[in-house]
Amino acid sequence: MKAINISKSLIVLAVILTLIPFFMSNDFYYEIAIVALFNSMIVIGLNLLMGYAGQISLAHGAFAGLGGYISAVLVGNFGLPPLVSMGAALVFMALFAYVISKPILKLSGHYLAMATLGIGIIITIILNSEEELTGGADGMSVESLTLFGFELSQSWQWYLLAALLLLFILWLIENLIDSPLGRILRSIHDSEKASSSVGVDVSHYKSIVFVISVVIATLAGSLYAFFSGFISPQEASFNHSIELVVMVVLGGMGRLYGAVAGAFILTALPQILTSFEEYQTLIYGSIIILVMIFMPKGVISLFDRFDTEKPHAKS
Image (cartoon, rainbow, N blue to C red; front, side, top):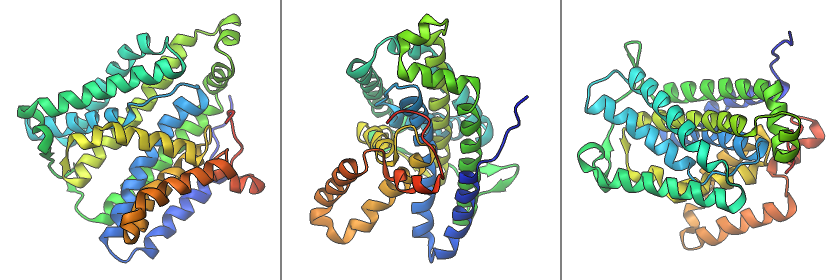
């Protein structure tokens, strides 16, 4: 039986995440870091779907938002404990993802993109229209998160929880990629027809990776709702889904740590550019275009010389 190892890249990231709080002077910087950690979780799952299985999704922002709403509604409207509500959200979204994956993953390319876009739009419409449950376009407040009788109220507590979860998810996905399932996903990415010809149930494995990515998005979306104390349909918007896809591409397709880099860069960049408010969109777009031109394999490719992470999938 193959031993499950902890990679050098994971250790390096753990050290970086440990050092980051020493450079934070107030809660504002903690908030940016925590949101970046939650985005990193979603993007890791999305990168698994896009970079390793070769399937695109323009609805992961909607999945994360819906997961957050389910957790918030079960706690606020039905009085369930936060952990139970998050567990219920994860189970529901896993089943939902499995059911919708069967028809939509028969599509490919821009047809698949349009199908996931449609699902995301439907979710957003439902969240806006069901005012009694979701508060409609105004959103709804979310109770604080209590774990085993301990309420998370300090920024450093949330940072610690998010950092540990991110490292755990990375560890799980790294071992999944190095497993037989990971090799099957890479074969599907290269050629679905070739994979089918050697007996691989392509539809089944695409559904598995889709469910995994949606469950990770649900977890991150639920935690973000509890962290912010408020959730609105904006969290499930099309723009958010596009931002997540850009994070994947910017960091590097098929590169787990590229996903983390892309999430941190695009989460922090708008805050850095606040002093250039009039030109923020222009600068934001120019940076992304330049990265795509000069670093087509993503920003993480800058570290390839150090062998911190070798790509598992084609870019």
